[in-house]
Length: 245
Length: 312
Image (cartoon, rainbow over the protein chains, first blue to last red):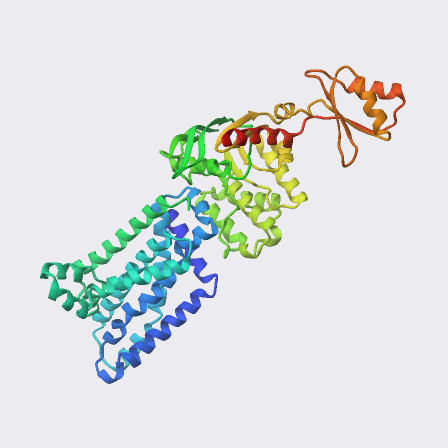
């Protein structure tokens, strides 16, 4: 990566590791991912060589851990006033938003890659479909990106990181919930099927589940790409409108 | 070069900047004076391209800050109010980041970094993270960031705030040394600074320009301009002697230190006649001084007259 996006990306990514926060985050993520997979997911008891119990908990893990990454993205710039420095450097708004987002995404990617012992374990114990495992990782990474884009946008609306965290959790929770069978059944009882499908197609769960089963469908990829694009665009608009606050 | 035309910034019903127009040429150091909340910082934020003006326009080196933001930002070095930076970075990493973003040419990079590190005395803190630095160091890191790419235009919002007297002196010397063929705008509410660095001063209050002149011209507006102040052993005798001089309009005695100030009639010089009279009358004087005019008094007169007008 070269140019201004790359420069901002590197500065931002380095700043994650300048404080213990990054290491704390990665450790918590790995511990929880492991605990969910092996205890709640019944990884051994199922007796199947796949990573469905592992990926199945990712949406719920991300629900709380991703907002913890994204909350500081812009709220901190606002609080310390460094947003004024950044916005008066010769970089465009798109470069700034993208550079910061990509750094956060790369950080989430690093945490995700560090779960490789799970993959090693399942290969040691059995003979899993590694194509499906790869698809699961792709889906999980894309979903992390979508969570982060939402968090980045919400972080730009406030100078308070706690508010950014809570609002992001709420919005992401609604987007997860929209794909939950219970919610969809309830909606199906009162709404026409077209609307129920629309709600379901907005949800992370719907798209993530289909990818993590091993089917990388263009529509699911497109969903995440559009989701990220939309929220990042909103992010830029929010910063432009609220620079003075 | 910086040019603003009818710059206006409104926040809802509040007008922070109300039609500010001025032009600063290379070689000039413009001092921006005004009470807190006068609109100094807002004006500077608009010139630097951080805030979009509600109406009017600003241009830097011929580039309009709204239509050609990148070109304008490239030619500016900007120190924002409070000198913000990235606290978790070390000074060295921060300056490297700025050099990257500012596209400092690789062959000049080493020399520019050495220049700012030397002139802002940052050598001892290069490896420290910025958040652990004192206020004075942080301000100097902000200044280093602003001048690193050797910009044609410098906009510095309170560059000496939080510095000790020695550091203030160093920063003023630095600004003076850069003044030649650069355009510099400095905001301050330290009036002595105007004399130390500025070739021109603009006083603003309530978002409007109230005065635009050289520091000397501003001083000559003071009622102290060409007045004579002295300390006499016998205050009463000195006072009576001065009162008999025809050119003296009025006499004031400072109740605290008994210093006497004689104000001349308009356009008259009284220093010679005052000293002659005192000598002739044999009144002992421990010190005597021709006043240049007092900037703080001009500042108060100009800005308070405006405030009264606004209340009326």
